[in-house]
Amino acid sequence: MAAAVRGAEELGLLERLLGLPGGNKYGVQGERQVPVLQTNNGPGLTGLVTIAAHLVRQARKDQLLGSTAEEKAVVQQWLEYRVTRVNGGSSKEDTRTILKDLNMHLEDKVYLAGNIFTLADVLMYYGLHHIMVDLTVQEKEKYLNVSRWFNHIQHYPGVRQHLSNVVFLKNRLYTNAH
Image 1 (spheres, one colour):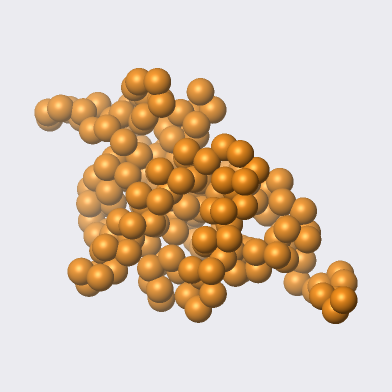
Image 2 (tube, rainbow, N blue to C red):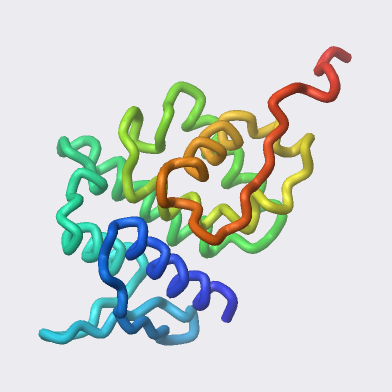
């Protein structure tokens, strides 16, 4: 049930970030508690990514979905990763794998899709927030690229909203020399 509340809550956060008036009614469906948006004119929309992309288009901020064909594909890839891996991962081992994957990917990038802020960054931030809050200082340092990216995204205007600020130390407490 917690993931369901998170999905609907994320969509509300996204609405505010996009400057949409809000007021959408979100529900959940099925065993996996998939978010559902009931629209006024037609069938409801199902799934976090589908609804999020719909909200981005509604706000006329299509650049958040990527500008080039390659960017769009990369954004879609990370949105899919978010839903299949981050939402699906529940064990400590899953979490380590996710953080390792992201850390490697972000080695030479500012954002998930390279040098542009996209919906993938927003939804990945929301999906990882509960994980990052619980990491120790040493774990945050181990996943330095993820920490750098996460800290950057949480300070991006309008993203964090009421979510707690995750603290990252700027200076190292110890050296990595062994």
